[in-house]
Image (cartoon, rainbow, N blue to C red):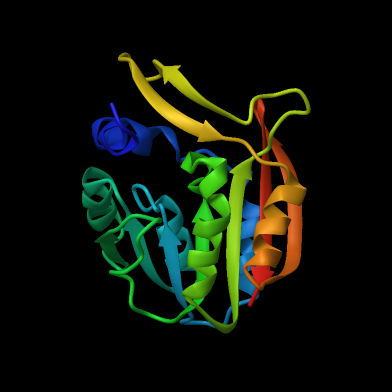
Length: 202
């Protein structure tokens, strides 16, 4: 089962399961604070629109994009104020806007590491001069795997997802090579995961 099929299958269960997370709040609020009210922001890999709603409620104009049609269906239902589109992070051709901000939370972690630099550069290309890119990924443990396919059974049935794990210097290197300047960095613990959050400016 490929990743898109997996997310289409688990969409409703995933949506119900991810309301209580809070590790992302400080970094996300920092991202919001750097933008003016009504700034145009792309929430790429938006899933069911949980963070799109948060950003919209903070006064931003949000375009949410995800490759899972089922996730976008839920997002449109839950966050009518935002503009949602089916799109892949590797092909942003259907996202024509020049953006004030790009929010990429827990999406680069599904990209093979040898493709991550190109994907970050593609996101940076969508930003206007002075715009901000937020990235959050799972941190690689010192002796941990770089990438893996995880078999999971959280919702009473089996499914698989590909994950890649990064270090903070790796993420910063991709951002700098994309022509951005790092403005914020943070690593926070949530359960068994360390989350890296970085914000960079074009």
